[in-house]
Image 1 (cartoon, rainbow, N blue to C red):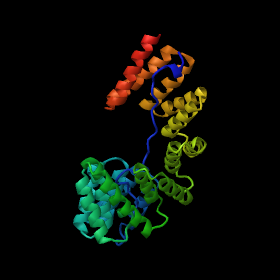
Image 2: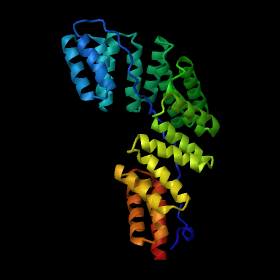
Image 3: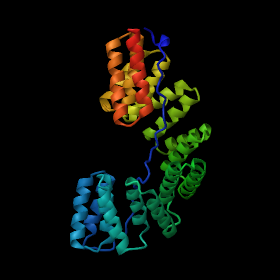
Length: 335
């Protein structure tokens, strides 16, 4: 059996936003208490280095020394966010705001915690308050753009929410013309609206600001693929992989490109990499099965489709689950 003779369908590439809603940008905190400033400074540095456990310990010590220290609660909230302790982070930001109701950064980061907890309306109120307190806070506009877009998706009002989100990203960029995250987020929305050339321009801007931004290369590669620029798309996915050798999605998408060029060996090598990095990556199993059709390796093909179907079912992706089952049925009849 050859792939061309079998009605089996290829998975398509999807956009991968760089910043999930509520991403924390570390904000400067005024050091107004000399007795605890050393621990607070150390905590900020450790959060920036993603040493969240140590940052948590530092902020615990700062709070023990001064239970009414706003900055220490803010910093502990950031450490808890980094560790995925969103309820604990929310409690820390609540305390920071209780101590200092005009702390724009605490409102912003509380909004981030609420976003992680899927409390979108509450997060929007927090971002609104952060902007009211600090109208020149580019980070807050960027975060509010994300929550506006997500709310629009959830409420079935995508067109308006996309325009509102773009307006916030525009404001973030006006305040900080070197804000790579805002360019990337605006590019994602523009791409979903079908304005691919403008999206590419935004991803180009991200890469100019930060040549090591892997997801900007990934997103630009996805748009180039949709524009039929296979060589450019492959170059972007390869660059993303060079910067981050553990980028499973980039391996999967480059595998799709190799498959479309009928180089199934290279494609399978990329799918193997994606699966080694993420053994729960259903699309990579599905796409590897497609490529194995070229070699008529029926047991391996069926095993991959079965694994993809199992993962799709577990992940609640019903359409792709059914598609994998359909392909298994077709293969069993063709054997």
